Length: 421
Image (cartoon, rainbow, N blue to C red; front, side, top):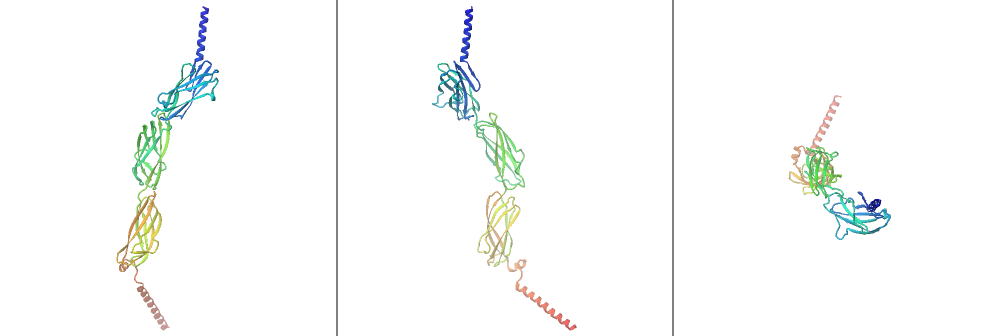
């Protein structure tokens, strides 16, 4: 009986020691096993890149350490990749490590690395990767799965295009604004919130808010958002930059904040009126100045106005044939004066052809050729309309008669005064 008890106790001790020698332990980041007095510990050092994008390659490094006192001989590691991971053709899953000396830990641990392809349709998030190893002639020890982070670096939602209902919005005019978004990432984006910042620009939303939402966009999908805005009536003609803010989430719940800029042009086609304001020439064969008025009747300013009077056989230009005027604000005017000599003609007018060049407030170029009619009158018509005075000889004669009459009247008055004395 006592011998049986002793045998049972011996068997129990033997089982306990055997369990101690071959026990394994694991955690999310560290897996270890014991072989006799060698104690192997396997850790995933890193993945590169981290995270890895679907469709890319990832290099995974494992560290093998021996925390026991005896050597671990003939250590072999084998990777067991499953979808979405795979090894390229020619790459071996089995790597022979050889001996790992006792207390070979830390910086002197053995690094084993594998280069894996990640399937382009891999689900984002943690994906499991399995590894096993053995020592000498022992059986394989399968470790707890390691986690490989698969994720698009930056879920990219881009503003693909912006279309305005009008190329140029007039002050006080409304226009549609279409913003097209495209998901250029390879995964879903969701809870897209878009806002036009109209705080510092002369625009206001019409009939709707300046904030819009999109529930979700699959990879490669596009969506359009419609806004209706109005330019304020006193908006200055120029290009305005409107900030566009948007944020969204990827499949893992990470939120991204982006911004873009929309350029809108406020303005209108220039309305430049050109007329002859005044002239010193009313008949042919005369020399004088002609003043031409340029009136800006539009809502946009005019810049860099240059005027050139072209030569014809009907007149000779005495002054410069070109005048630079510069800027004309909206609802304002400027003038240019030319001195010409009108040739002898029986025509009722002569034509003044002028060429003008200028820019609007948004630096668009304009050029025009304009013909202005300068009216001519006969001498009688000029006197009749009060455009010309009578002959200078007749005027001198009248003055002489008045002076002579005054002189003789004065002498007669002096003579009568002497007689009375």
